[in-house]
Image (cartoon, rainbow, N blue to C red):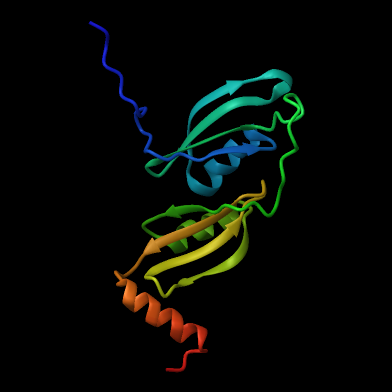
Length: 158
């Protein structure tokens, strides 16, 4: 009888980001300092690059590899204004924020209490990725969030 195999590997969820990073080995070190990442896998490739790496941050996995676009004749990686944000939910947004900034992240959107009920801010890491530090601080209905947003957009006047 064949051994039953789970369709999702242990420790993974249905969605897992897989990033292309310039300097994947250094990114592992950065993620350890900034987000307490735990390295779970590393596959060395040619020329000192990493073919694949996986870290665990909180209860989620993040996969990445070095840029092999030149080796495969693909367009080069674009840095600095990627159309994605990695949202990182934590128990203490201020502590996570301070740790990430100390590790080299720069502020893109200051950490603050938002109309939708999260303490939220955005940081850019030194490798070109944007991280949102998030902590739910209150449950807000969609109607309450819409009303708060409308008030905020009108300059706080009813």
